Length: 328
Image 1 (tube, rainbow, N blue to C red):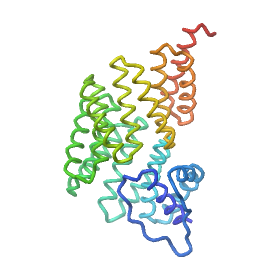
Image 2 (image 1 turned 135 degrees about the vertical axis):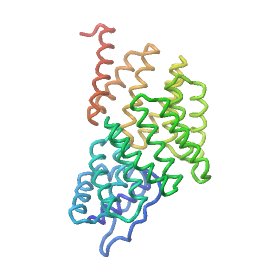
Image 3 (image 1 turned 180 degrees about the vertical axis):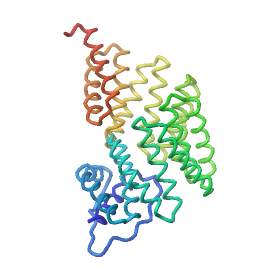
């Protein structure tokens, strides 16, 4: 049963996260027939339906001391957890995965586990604890002379510092990641990802010209390599730059393109974020009813994902709209 869930989840994750480094799984046990999955949509539907069983499979493997399987299940669940906003499940699964990885004679697994857990902790607001794991991942990656894992960790550190409002430090880490990726010509998608981060944090410090250049370069690379997740992020970032340059029509166009891609990939976590931004552009364009509609949808998603601070903020935005419109 555990092998069924591991191998099916891995096949599904390859559709959702096709630019990730492949895992080296043992062949399925005799009699195990993984579920055949044909594309990203089928994979996402399977993850949604089987999510409680996948969590149970990891717990069952942990009880039996199947450390390799425990860690691998943690790894193949992380993209699904991110897309659907299962932030606390991600932390639980990755803590279990890290404990299992520490039993393996494989430093790469420990690097990966510390990095993923650190990023997951930062996403639930526990940046300090997350930073400790990210620094551990970076030290292990440097000791192993792995530029690839160093670059990934610098990206995660950029996001963690950004969540703390330290946008200058975030930009430094994103820039460092780009330089490391540039030394590996096989990583154009990861180079594009670093450019996206650099663009985002350049925008956060008010350097919109630099931000646009980085995000446009990222958009071109992601489109060349058919990476729709990265393409959506670049479009979102460009919309943000447009907004701050006062070009609300262009911002709305960029956000809408990002929204289509994020809906198509089932990334409801980012759908919520994008709807929130779309609402601000509608308000700037005097389109009150359209703003109200997208913010109501965003509110439902934030509430479903347990993102309480975002939900409170969007509810306040809706209340402000009602007051302006004279709605009791």
